[in-house]
Length: 253
Image 1 (spheres, rainbow, N blue to C red):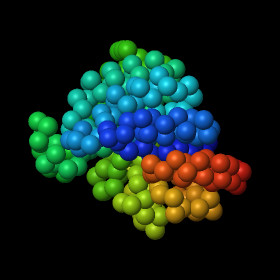
Image 2 (cartoon, rainbow, N blue to C red):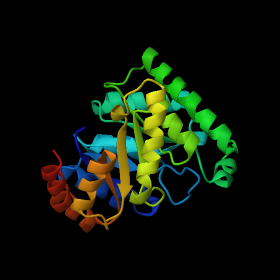
Image 3 (cartoon, rainbow, N blue to C red):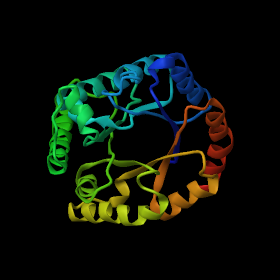
């Protein structure tokens, strides 16, 4: 798969202009993806879908993804329509990262369900079917939208292998030394479902401590083909775009 490199944006409501400038800097620097975290119960954050829509209107090329959607607070059918609508309006630049949910006190505080781990996985599995079914009937996306799951535990990893287009995780919760075991579970579930594991994209949120050679190693050993820098530092974005990204693209075949 083609290497993609991008940034992970904190949707800071206290300085929305700076948040937007980070997205524009990524676009100008030739990066491929902007991921925006989704925590609706966090009072200091802008709404993720509103920010994604605004970013789509301010950019022309970069791909946009919630990293990852908090499913318990996003009705699947409405989420499907929002994603398809933004994809149409942006000329096919949207992908959909989804998580089963976390921080249940915050979710419940906004009127969402308080789910058990098992219930949250079942709800996500059902949501994938609802979303894809909705896209078949319309409004249809401009291009096929991939569904990337934020998955760490065994049931979520198996669901990723069975149904997802991609696996989107963060280095803090899935450090490099754990990736072999985690990806093996995805691959096994994919093969059991009759899928080619190589068709499942692997995407990694990481911090600035990772060097170009580290990213190449992650690609070679674990098939990770997208690297998303978590930062709100404009200088780090520029360094990642102008130093790290070119080296990785040159070294990875």
